[in-house]
Length: 328
Image (cartoon, rainbow, N blue to C red; front, top):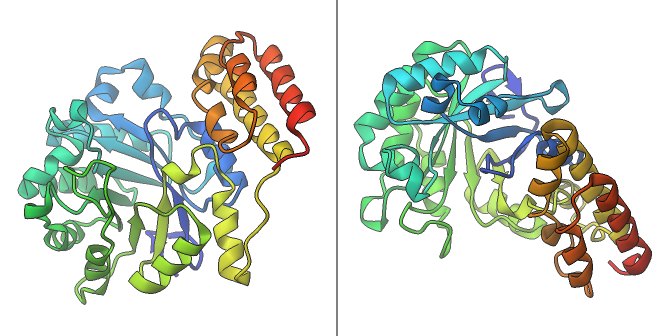
């Protein structure tokens, strides 16, 4: 059974990926309810934490019902990363995760996230600075390399393990691929099968069904799977995968009632955590995902994204159940 430090994750853990503007406490709570074994915060700028930026500090909010939960940081300066890890430790997460995988330009241009893939020596120094600054387990999430000509994940895995990380998650794409094209998990298998490696290796990229999760578990021999985009608007995927692993059978798709309940919980928890205005506005991006593929949802969606009071949105969601409730 894979363990991160003293954290027992069970036989084959399913991890919720850290996703900017998605993996906040309300969303994490939903995924935990539906079977996620390990949760991660949105990624947090080390510079922002040190400057006491309000948005960065708010991302440090974690709750006991989420555990085990990790806080993910990113940055390109050793001193800033070390100091931010100390700040993170004050809220007592179960681990600190380092983001060496985010491909977006605003992060990469600062020499952080996947930008560090161009300089493996820097990646190792940044990791070592974090490991040396905290007593918490330190994990890393990264990609295969900068581009197809510079795939270096096997070297990276060995060197990061050597400086003390407790687990490694690999998104099976290069930075140049962004989120396009196919992920290539054969590189993850090479890392996992390297006799020098003894830490848990988790795979990430393109897992969007129980069948694919089982296929990849068996084919690539990883210790667990991290799920990102497939969980957006569909937190049920974690329990669906677990059920399929245990029985070989697919659970029924969530009903309209299930979808309405999830969207309502997400909204109410967002309002509770962020406040009425921010909670209502930031939920608007999620409704289309919760009701993806449901016929005749368009007119309901328009109403949900224009109402300004949470009470009105709850009534509109109740109306969705009333009108569309007979459909899956």
